[in-house]
Length: 424
Image (cartoon, rainbow, N blue to C red; front, side):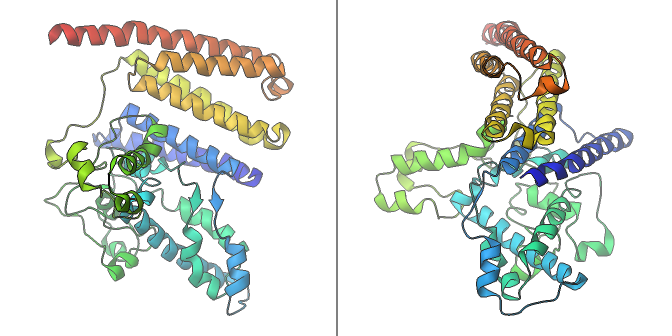
C-alpha cells in the first residue's frame, strides 16, 4: 500500500497536467468538452478510488500468486518477451472482466461510475469504482498462470496497463488511420461510452481492439450517429459516492419488493438492467429512450458556488497528498480513519454541488468530526511536526467550511427554490 501511494506522487501530477493540456487544446479549437461540475465530480471520484486502493480495501478471492504456484504448466525465464506475454494476457483478462461488468446486473454496479459522466474527456477516465469489494480479475488471468507468468511480472505490468487506458478518453482526437485496426483509440472508446442503441456494450477492449473483433463486440464510430454519453438510467447527481452504490441499492430494493423468491435470487446474475416483472410494473424507473432529446444534468449554480466547490476539492486533494507522503508515520488505524474522513469530505461538498438542502447538516457533521479529530490528537496526524500550528489552521478551515456551506444553503439554494415556486 505504501509503495502504491509513492507511485501516485508521480502519476497524479502527470494525469493532472494532461487534463490542463486537454483544456487548453479545447479552448484553442473552440470546442466545449469540459463542464466544471462534471469535471470536479470526476476528479473527486478519482480521489475516492485511489484512497480505497491505497488503504487496500479490495479483497482478492484468489490471489494470482497462489494461482500461478498451483496450476502453472511451465517455468518461463524472465526476459522482455515474458513482459510482452504478461501485457497481452492482462489485456485479454481485462476484456473479459470488463465485459462481465457490462453484462451481469451485480457487476454493473462496480462499473457504472465510469460511465456516469454525460461528458467525454480525460477527467471522466478518473471515474473509478469504490464499490468493487471483491476482485474477479484473477479468474481471467488463468491463461497467464498456466504458462507460468510470475506474479512479480504481473505486478509490474498491471499499473502500466491501467495508465495506458487514460489517454483515449477524449473527443479532441479523430480517427487514427491504421492504428484503428490494432489498438483502442479515442474513436473506439467514444463508441463504448455512448448510450446510442447502435453503440451499447461495444468496444470493451482496453488496449488491443482485436478482442472485440474476435468476440463480436466491435462497433466503428459512425459519422451519422454522434455519440451521446452517460448511462441509460441517468444518475442525475455529481456525488461519486452515491453513484457508486445507486445500482446496488436498486437491486436490493427490487429483490426485497418482488414477490417471487426465484427473482429475489436470480436478479443479481441476470443481464444488466433486468428487473422482476411485478417490480417494473409497480416501481418504474425512468430510462433514456430518445438519446438526442435528453437534457444533460446540470443544476444552475453561481460562480461563487463553483469557486467554493473547487476550493473544497483542493483542500481534500492537499490532505490526500499529505496522507500518501506520511503513510508510515501516521500508521494503522490512523490511515484508515484519515482516508474515510476524506471520503466523507467529498460526499459533503458534492451534496452542495447537487444543491441538496441537507448539505448544510452533512457539512456541519463533517466539520465537527474534523475538529474532534484535532481535539483528540492535539494535532492533525502529526501535521504540526511539519507545519507548526498547522492543525489549528486546518480546524479553523473546518469551522469556516461549515459556516460558508450553511450560507450557500440559506441564501443561494433557498432563494432559487423560492424563485422557482413564485414562477410556477
